[in-house]
Structure formats: C-alpha cells, structure tokens
Length: 359
Ligand SMILES: Nc1ncnc2c1ncn2[C@@H]1O[C@H](COP(=O)(O)OP(=O)(O)OP(=O)(O)O)[C@@H](O)[C@H]1O
Ligand SMILES: [Mg+2]
Image (cartoon, rainbow, N blue to C red; front, side):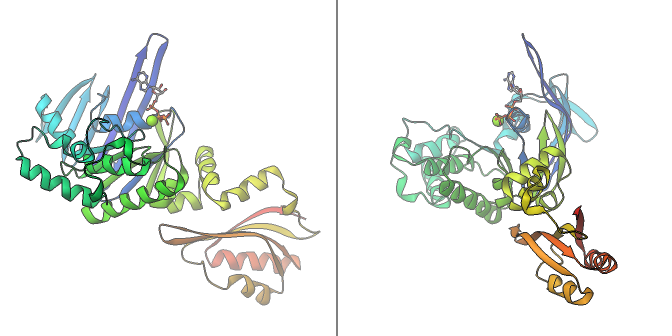
C-alpha cells in the first residue's frame, strides 16, 4: 500500500544541516495498522509529512496506493508506465486527498461547530449541501458523536476532539490514515477509546493506518508490525510480537522494557537484582515461551522428568495481538547432567533458554 525507497530529507538551517530522513525504507501492507516508534527528533513527523507530500523530500521514491512518486533533488515526478513526468499541483492534491491525517493537537476550527469542522474538507468538492450534510451525519455516527453535531470544540473533551478530527480526516474516504501522536495529549482512558476506534475503523473500512508514537504501549495495543526509528532511519522492523520476544537493537530493548514486565527482567539482570541470586551448583535461567508453547505444563513436566528443582523467581504472561508471550526467570537446581538435560528438553519444546548466571 505504501512503499518507500531511499527517502532522504535534510533541513538546511543557518546553524547547520539537520538530516531528518537518511535513506528511509518501508513497506506497509494494505489494511494493516503499522506502527512507527522513535524518540523525539527521530524523524517520525517528517516521515509522515513526506508520505502525504506536505513536506517535499529531497530524494527517493514512494508508491502510495498504486501511484509512484519519484523525487529528485526536491522535484516531484509521477511515474506512469516507463515514463516520468513532473507532477502538477492538481495531481499532488488528488494524492493528498487519498490520505487522511490526525495530529496530537487535533487542529480543529474553534469557531466552527463539530459538524462544520467535519464538513470542511467536503467544501469545494462539488458535493451538494444535502449530500455534505448526509456524509457528515454518517461520519459523526462512525465516531460515535452524533449528539455533538452542533456544539463547539471548546465544549468537548480531548478524546471527543480527537474523534472529530478522525471524522474530518475520513471525510474524503481516504484509504490511508496517518496518525501522528494522536493519543499523546490524552489521558489513559481516552487513549484506550481512541485506539479502539482506530482498530474498529481499520477493520470496518479496511483502512490502512500508519501510527506514529513514542509509546510502546500504543504499538502493543493495536499495531501488527512496527518500525523503530532513530536518527532519520529505520533501525529495526518486524511483527510487534517478534520485537517484544526478541528485540535486537538497544533502542528497541528500551522501548520493549517500557511496555513489558518481561523487559524489566532484562533491567533486573543488568542491575544485578538480589532477587536473581542462585544457590551453589544451580543455574539461573531466563525462559521465553512463544506462541507455540505457552500454556503447556512444561515446568512441572521437566521437574518430574529430570528430577530437578525449578523455582520460579519472576514470571509474566502478556497478550500481544491476541497471542500469549510468556517469560520467566527460574533457578534450576539438581545434578549437573540432569539440569543440562532439562534445559535441552525445554529448547526441544521451542522454549528459548538463556543461562543468566551459575551458582
Ligand atoms: N521544518 C523544519 N525545519 C527545520 N528542521 C526541522 C523541521 N522539521 C523537523 N526538523 C528537524 O528534523 C528532525 C526530525 O524532526 P521530526 O519532527 O520529524 O521528529 P519527530 O520524530 O517527529 O519528533 P517528536 O517525537 O518530537 O515529534 C529534528 O531534528 C527537527 O528539529
Ligand atoms: Mg513528531
């Protein structure tokens, strides 16, 4: 649905150049909720502003819903067949209309009612007043704000304002919705309800959503895949579940730690927590139970089968995309060969086993 190749964008300031996108590559599939996470200044907003061409990239290629845009030295071309032609403002506007966008600050018109805010993008499209009214009613129903049509934004809560912004973003029936920190200004309840709405719209309308955030809990709640951005580039990418199970880059590990008790296990290891001490001859192990082995009675099974003691120090199971991911720190004690055999047995059963310390 969105393919980005070798996208570059540098802001040239008096104080020096700021490279906000250095060779960005992404492939976002139709109908998925794709997360982009990174700390402040990583280049996330620049990326979404390039996708909807609010910002002109310096160089690169983007295919958006079947249209290929090629950018060379800040000049935008459309590729059709084998030929590249300079893109007209009209063509770019048509492309932009196919992409909805929502922001942290809602960007509503304070002096217009909710209904007028939602109607705004439909003006000058040639639609009749009656058709616009009908579409606005439909959109307000979609975001569950039918009863707020005639009130002003100042009379709404943050969550309700974001619902208005979502309705407005969907007015022209875009197939893609870009969400730039849309829940960052909301309290936890409102965040949850906006995320539930986005998930719902994704399912009901087949909407492809690119969700920018600096919170891993948001990614965990609704994204299927995620890209981790640092310093203008994607440093790690994949299924959200896999990133939680096996984060590779230090920055990804930090994000996972922030949203998962399992991540805290890593922190305890690094900090040498007294909880993680093991008796003489014992092994302290970290076990990860993936989708295909959570729920099996493996722990009591290995204890019995190999005659080892397995004491659980810390354990957690969480649900990511409806699939369980379990983690555990355990002290394993027994005859050395029995302990080895027990750990090999767990590995055979697809448990990831990491020996953290030996007593
Ligand atoms: N219009 C601009 N002019 C100059 N520099 C800019 C401009 N927009 C962004 N930058 C710079 O580009 C870099 C990336 O900014 P960007 O806003 O894309 O980051 P971000 O990941 O969205 O951060 P945040 O989480 O704070 O929103 C930053 O160093 C920023 O200062
Ligand atoms: Mg930003």
